[in-house]
Length: 437
Image 1 (cartoon, helix red, strand yellow):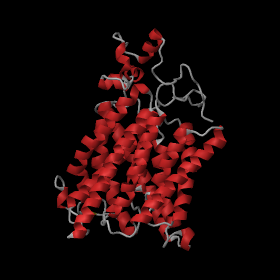
Image 2 (cartoon, helix red, strand yellow):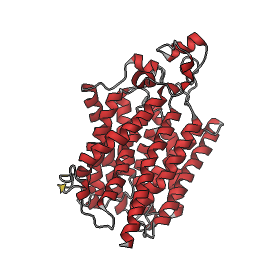
Image 3 (tube, helix red, strand yellow):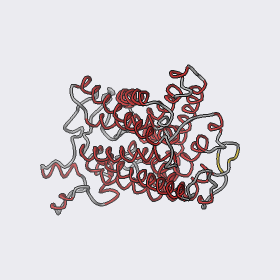
Image 4 (cartoon, one colour):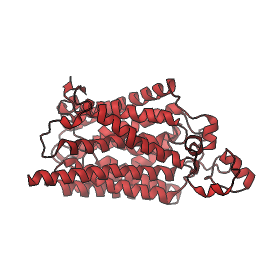
């Protein structure tokens, strides 16, 4: 009885930490986008926590953890997820709450990649579809004991593949179909830098995400007495430090300055990449995985730009590329089955197959959602709405209320700058044309 009580407290606290990460997503994305869209990204996180959470509880959980059909999808527990039969000493409600946090996190990965130009109604539909179909289906394959990838022996302890890779690849597909923000790319392929609105705000978001990740990874034990808790936690910390350090030094060498946004994303890349293997690798391996992810996030960001896919927060590089890398890294560094640790190639083959399947499913899912939105509520904001800023277009309020001092505030923020001479938005293509090298 005491163990059940202790486990219940641990899982509920870990679930709260995972759900608190949504505050991190909100601050991170608000800081990375332009001022005129900061409220909109925050509202999208509220959509994740409301519409997304309810949709997952009602349908998504059953598809993910219900009794399986052919190892592909669940067919039970719809509207009653608490009826799941668990083999672990926690109440089913605690497990449902914890999994709800994971589902919400998967949606929020997409939020940043489609920022500043997506129709708000389309995002509501996106959140529902990800939590009902896209995330639960591949999650069933990997985490349900009946899932076909689980039966093959795929290892993904806390979701590098099940959450981050599928979310990151879906984000890539949707960002590609949305098209770039107006003025982002030049005809010669060069990139115009849209300066972020508030780096300290984005940093605060990253710190919250970093904190919540200990619940994300260590909480996945679902057992407060699990001896692996401490090693999972320190592996999480070491990989994050490795990713951030690598990105810091790479940008110092490449650009001559320590780039804060890339350092932030380096930390997050380290966290994403260790999520699959945090319970299966040594501390030295965690550092190697983290440092590798720092390299990956820098050059993946450049690659995404060269593909002319506009990702305002770097979600594709952080979650997509490093979710895939973290999944494959288990096959390389697993203490008992890793190619580089034991010479055994069998696990690496399974991990590579799982990563490939998730990439294909994430892309198909992203295209499917974009098409559904396009045919129903409309996928992209209008040119007028985008120019004005989604804060005023969709929510009727700016992020920074000093604008209220001006009673005749023009509908366009750019008109406001031109008529008052006061700059209220970060540098845009009108006055800054720095290029990504």
